[in-house]
Image 1 (cartoon, rainbow, N blue to C red):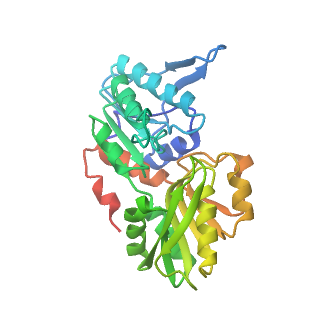
Image 2 (image 1 turned 180 degrees about the vertical axis):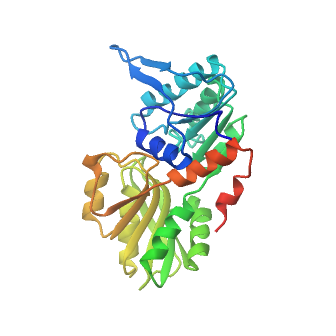
Length: 313
């Protein structure tokens, strides 16, 4: 079944690619991905891929533009090498927050990125926890959108927490938070906030009862941790007991680690969709792997089997 399956990786998250390959019991395919002295990306596929079903593991994580160009050039190289099908596996989809015109004369960069991936020659996309599910509609190729909810619920179920309330940090995350609340058989709370600028928010109110409860904040990504700190402060102010956070993509930029250290958050769980450098390791942060989830999805796509059953409880 796997004689025509090939797994490639750029430089964005090679460890995850290796873990996926181990799960599939398929050797990671050989490709040279580097840069010329002036910064241009250099790619060479070092094995025959003619007629193969190819998957490229490459989250477009920081440095976003370098990793994006690696992905596009690898797709082009594989297309010109006569691969039968090319699936771009983006555990983290960069530029996803620029998914609409929220002010005059700004681009919709998430759509531009979708066009670039499609034009380069990708046959389909596989990703996890998009910032907005509507981004799937930016593509004219099939998109398999996975969710990390089972990874998190399995982890928190083992902690044996009681009297849980699942918290959405904004109105846009209600659907995700409701799904978590259903899995935990827990109550739901929503933080009503307004955005001051691209990095600062202000909490206006909390909808739902959090007093005396263990709160789990759920979100798709954590960048500067500004929203997380604001949410934690508001929950403590309203009498929440211990506060946890389950956030899929650990961008952890700018003052994120300092803010996590100094806030009342007890524990943060993230996924390895983005590699967390040693300098960003923190006692409060636990990293969960999505290699099984992506590996199983790749296996089912390759075998032309259903991927939707991965969403079941």
